[in-house]
Length: 135
Image 1: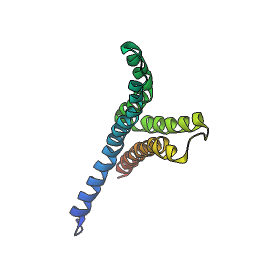
Image 2: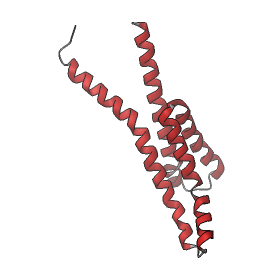
Image 3: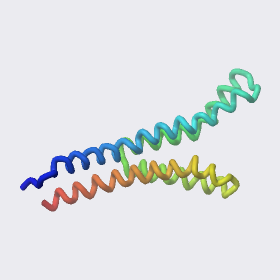
Image 4: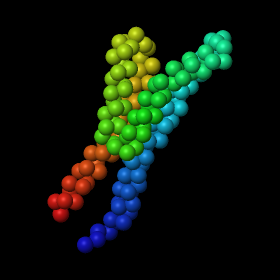
C-alpha cells in the first residue's frame, strides 16, 4: 500500500543514490587533475626537451595511481575504495609527519574520503541486494 509522500521520498532516495554513485568518480577525477598540477614544476627546472618530458612522466606517477584507482573503483567499488584508502595511508607513512598538517588535508584526506565513498556505495548496494533476497 502506498503511503502519502512515498513518491517524493522515493525520488529523494534515488537522487541520493545517484549522488553517492557519482561522487567518488567525479571527486576521483578532480583529485587526479589537482595532483597533476604539482607535476608542472618540471617546466621551471631548465631541463632540455627530452629531460623535461622524462621528468614530467615521472612526476605524473601519483596521477597514474589515482587514475588507476578511479578506473578500478568505477568497475569494482570495493577494491577501488580500498586502493584509495591504501594510497592515503601510503602517503602518510612515506612522509612520516614531515609535512605541515595542511598538506595532509590536501593529499591523503581527499583520497581517503573518495575511498570511503566507494565503500559506502558498495556496502549500500550490497545490503540492498541482500534485503531484496529476504523478501
